Image (cartoon, rainbow, N blue to C red; front, side):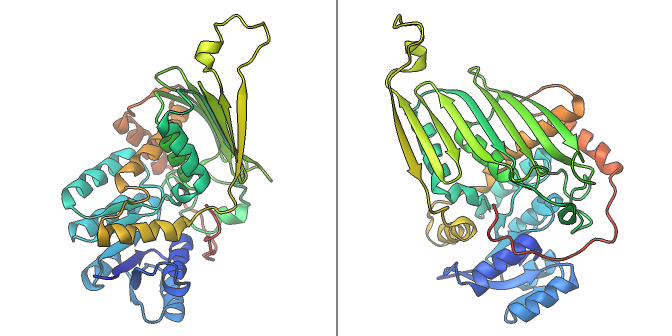
Length: 385
């Protein structure tokens, strides 16, 4: 097999971008797009006009049974990610899942267990793991060069969205349709990067504001505090209500710091670890000697096509994946913990009480309202996170 035959389930915003990358822009030379599926006839009409040689189906099951697929990319509303991933796995079809892995860890854990038994390749579309800036941060932390984590802070508030964005789909920004707001839609990549670089904390306490800046029922403003087993702390702040907002990820360790902002990563290395220097008698206002390195990353990496190309290479040759599918539960654990803390009004401890979170979420799903008179305009999201 020289190419994998791919089917894309869901050709909304992200699915459309993937169709273009694979079948129109030619960014994935080892992948042939052979089928798409969508329950919306308008989207199938778009596919007929733009990729006429690609098979079109109105359901995932039909595409899986008749499309001749080697692999399927799942790009439907969040609740259905595990369901259709398992439908593919049950047929021996390899699976790539768009972020997030699902809405709640209970269903994602089931998907992970199913994947382990199926023997197929299972991957997540965590395209930010291809960004050289975050790869460098991951490598520095994994190497132990900067020592133990002391503090992490990420303020990412450049997600601004107008009301029209939220009115672009009846399911969008609802408990029953999307399962959350900025944590479930905009921030899964950052929460994945947080755990990929810093690991998972021991406790999470979050203050969420629901519909603070928009006419929505889910969160659009988040401030979360985390604490690690070694005493290190973390703060994660995000919103879709600020403009222009900012994006700054700062990590302090025993031997130095990393600050990522814009295209630049500033690495400060201390000659003496803080844990040693603090107790020495070297003057009341003394500080460890330091060196500062600034790296500017002009290239954000191969992004979505890069993840798909690695997926194809893994199937064809066994090359490493960018993000194994089983890891999708880790960032989702953080968002579920933040939601649960806000629901209960108190800190929560990891491992997460998955049954409690599910029950609290379902309470909100029962009273969730879908929007009417929405726009179904599809945007090209290839330039976004």
